[in-house]
Length: 146
Image (tube, rainbow, N blue to C red; front, side):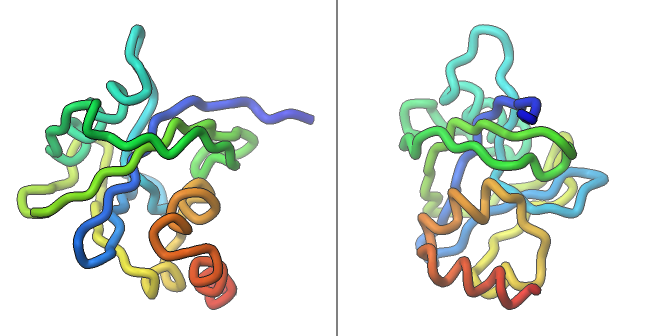
């Protein structure tokens, strides 16, 4: 059986301290990378830039987003769906002024140690956070939750 697919753009945002900015939508438990679904005619990078502005007040030119490829995992909040995400990276030098908006209930800068205590979306755990902290440490954090 194949899953239904949700197409999104997602942005792995990090800072100089090696933290990752994660968001949680209203009515959900899982933290994930900011991003969302494309509007008609948008490129994946344009979608990512628009979503960053809407969700967090981060204004970035789409060309400033570094491509990280396309990844597919189970969707965090839609049972029976897979998410196919065009992923990008962005490093933020000054995190002041970033605030949750639109459908975002919470935005948090997380460290590797936080992973053991929070619900994290599959795309983040399997594809994106290992790029920040490495496969083995992220896997160890997952085991610590079980």
